[in-house]
Length: 197
Image 1 (tube, helix red, strand yellow):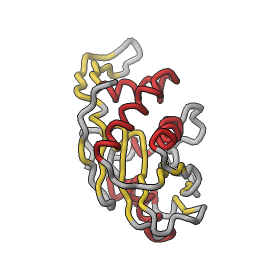
Image 2 (cartoon, helix red, strand yellow):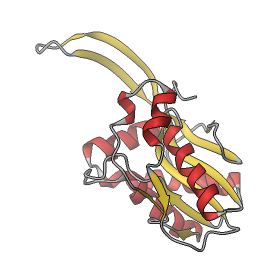
Image 3 (spheres, rainbow, N blue to C red):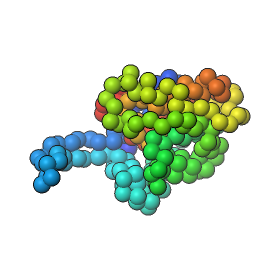
Image 4 (cartoon, rainbow, N blue to C red):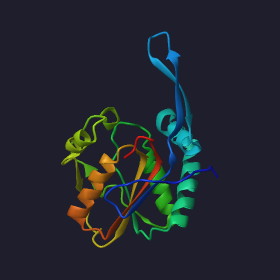
């Protein structure tokens, strides 16, 4: 199984973790022939697997990511009943890591998988390109809504692939609290950036 080193993630949930950093180091090495900056990037083992899945469409890494997440959730034992994926920022992406990993994770843990409980109701720009946290919050205001019932009084695990500022995960958690009256929210991301709040 791939090695990982869990990191806490803060937000409006009871407790939250990422399995590891996404990138361990990134060193500027110059410009290419087109004038673009080039970096020597070293990812964590989980970060490398996620990169291969998300940006190289390497489906053969899904089982390794699921195994790592399953191992951690079993040890952490947040006593959740449902896994809810954070809606994708890019719905047009053919490979959706959150759904691929989350669905298998829920099945292997014997938890309910609720892929359409929360949906994105308006398009937003790519938030990785927005550096101001308050601006991200404004862009996400009213961007999500709860679409299905049956979550009242349940403990849920909010699941995402990459935790950057936490703005998206917090927006989804807020909507869950307001509209579905869940009992408790826990959060899990596969990786987090070093710039995460």
